[in-house]
Image (tube, rainbow, N blue to C red; front, side):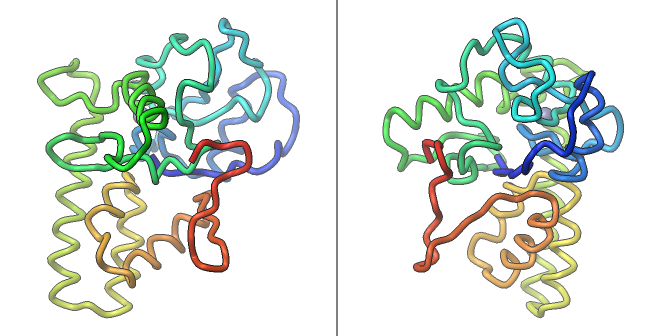
Length: 222
Ligand SMILES: [Zn+2]
């Protein structure tokens, strides 16, 4: 789950839908949960649902979501603390992605963090496969396409491991599913650097200390 920084509210809103464009400028046209690229009808979702006490017009309570994650999430979460959130936590450090399992909590997490990471998967049902969901829920197909594209790109990279190729792959990764690209290229620092550069333009949150270790976000669990 790509960690994002929305920055401060650009303005005040009288309807949450008005924040759609501002959010997309800051964090890109991607579902904040499943990382699918959404070219049309991306939804502004309330992180804490309105009928669970969530602020209806507060920028801090907004993320962008695909229809499927938003529908699965519904109003089921009555708090934020039991989950990990991409605008609050370093969520990329919490999950492992694979073609077979889709998304699972990283094995090195302590028990408490592991539970929160799993709760977020369950809330949006991020790990459903084609035989476990409806025809309308195409998240699994989007994931599969990203795996195929990333693996094809990896073959091309091995044939021509030069900066221009790394740059091209980073641009291709903007088709969505950031975490799949990071997984496929995890041992290829030149490509990772280029992907990092592209996604930083659209709100990737990734702060390092002087020893290049990741900094835990203010108020975050990871
Ligand atoms: Zn989604």
